[in-house]
Image (cartoon, rainbow, N blue to C red; front, top):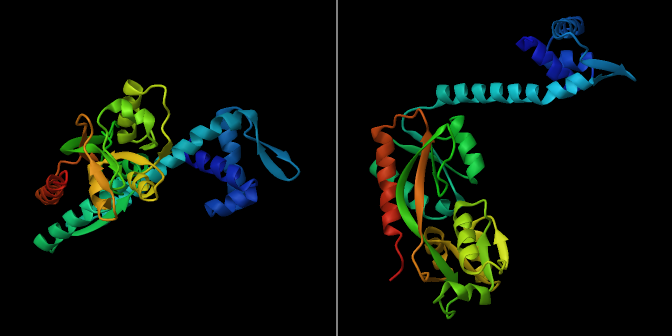
Length: 294
């Protein structure tokens, strides 16, 4: 099955007729009909049945359909990668990050970098880990800053620094003295799909296995926002807690320190550059300054 046969198959699936398929492919209807006939002859079975004026996939075609869809997605990814490689210019850094770093830390680091290196420019996008890794692999992003450890064959990881897990409350609420006290309080935690959320989940299973969290959320700053609205207490990373502290949060250390690695993820074949290291130096410095409040 050649690529033009894949194209006609996909176009008929989307359009429902040879006329629509021909329009999608910008060819004549007779040419589309010939492509379909050739594809069916090479495969040795019919791909579509005509029902009330529409072409309906046969059983065999329905089995082929998801594989054809993946081929098209792979081709789209190749096209996007080629476009990004062609359009990318030296000095522009497209950085993706978890929402936690986009609140304050990265804006501070990138503004300093821009002042020190006026020729540099930046695009900053915040997403969750899955979207960030996909954008990295197709070169929509040059680097990603995340708590995620980048378990992907197309990604290389550099641990830039560590932050820590902290307890955030409204002012006047006592800190945790022992882990077991979590059973007596209304805690808001990150979803277990989040790397920090997974760490908290392990913590709960170790010390209060019979107690479910009061609420689960997807982002650290939403957890902090709920604390500010007197919904409960939360366990979040120190970076987010410091960014939200000015709005009235109290930050407490935990009974035992729990460190969270902060990673920079890049494409596996990215050799790096002096320009990237200058960007990372400013990010690293901002992380070092994000310490527990005195």
